[in-house]
Length: 281
Image (cartoon, rainbow, N blue to C red; front, top):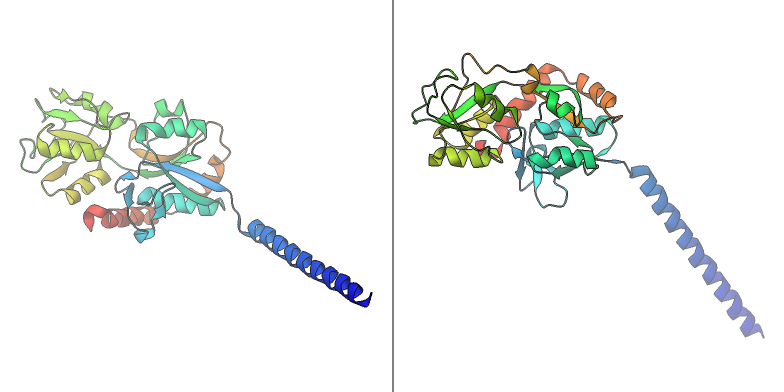
């Protein structure tokens, strides 16, 4: 009888101990998750438009892991994405997206923001909203350093040239202002245009100054020209802003974050991005 009683009491004590341990673990996990969890901010970019954004194999230069990939994204846009995520108290997630898929991804909710060197043009504003500008550049024309148009000064010095730009950009639209050029089919990305240029498939492509600088760094037989006078265009076409879904309530908060970044710091971030891009290493 005594042996049975001792056995029962022992089993009951063990059950109480196990229950207590299980309860402590569960409460600890819940508390830990609650104290560290943040909403995720999904930011879309090409990760292929240096110095605004590019892909690399490690986290150097403040790079951020690309969702669903072993690669990392770095560059000017990534630095702004990091500051915006911090300002919103959200966890940054970079989503690598083709250029022509950025707006549809934003509209569908696959991403929350576009931070990809995108200009807030009137046409794009029909589909998505934008924050205040976080960078302003100017147009350039990229040519072969030893090519027939290397000494061109004006947009009208390219008669007979085969010229292109990236699809769905104002870079491609302004080619219509160049007298006598052969406007080629728009390219999918800047890497493709650089290859076309060096192979002779095209004579020039239209871009922005930071990308022109990047092209010179990446390929020694390429140079960029700042035409005088430059292309006529609305200032919004050379500005860069954050794209948001129509009616997003994040615009005001993001504008507050951007307002706290002085112009000197913005220029320094671009200088660093140009120096840190893969082509410059």
